[in-house]
Length: 304
Image 1: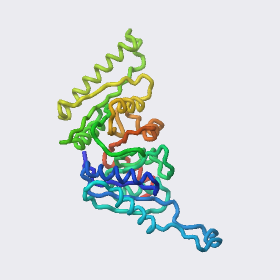
Image 2: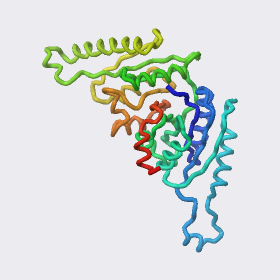
Image 3: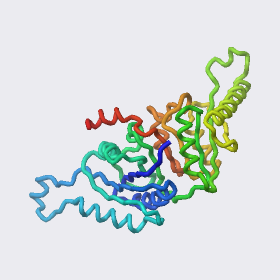
Image 4: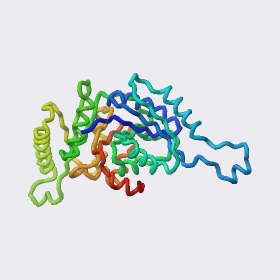
């Protein structure tokens, strides 16, 4: 487990920025973060020569004007009294590549990005960033206002689950927050050869999951009052099961890992990863990664 002290917030100069600044101000207070980078990646700060020639009075947006606009939004919508060091920056280039690069350069512990539904604007692709970034990620829906009364944590009892539960316990420590773990289990192929029906073997798998949970708690010295719920993945759609459960619980946040051992292992790999990140949900999603995870891939990608 590591402290989430340095946040990087990706702004795109749209209405979404107001939501992200408000949410981050409370998130930083909850996490006791020390520094917040607000960064906007402009694809091109220069006007084409032909356009400048034909329209000499036309002015290109400058990084100074963009920074001033961002500063006004931060000043207006930062709602808490958390005294973080604030940095506002504008960079130029491909949005997704640049945000990954600056996460690395700034040694960021967590990115904060918006999840849009109705609001316009684009640039940074959350699913692309989530798959290759070596830092944790907070996805904030456009209609979010920060509250943290109920948290759902999907687990498969792997070492990544240990990391996620540790972070969840740290975040909710000494606070009146309900923490519910969720294990999604499957019936293995070939169950019918045992002479058991599907429902009978589902009960067997749930019993195994309950035993694994008790061992997980004992092995990692987690509190005895941790509660784990269980759900059967009967249609190979674990992401749907997670969001359905979180909705039923009226969860304010889902905190989950980037990897696992079975079932949830693919949630951040390939097509399932994209579905989780782009899921049409009103629930904020926090993805916990080990610090430095995918570092080698990032450096190769960006040729740092």
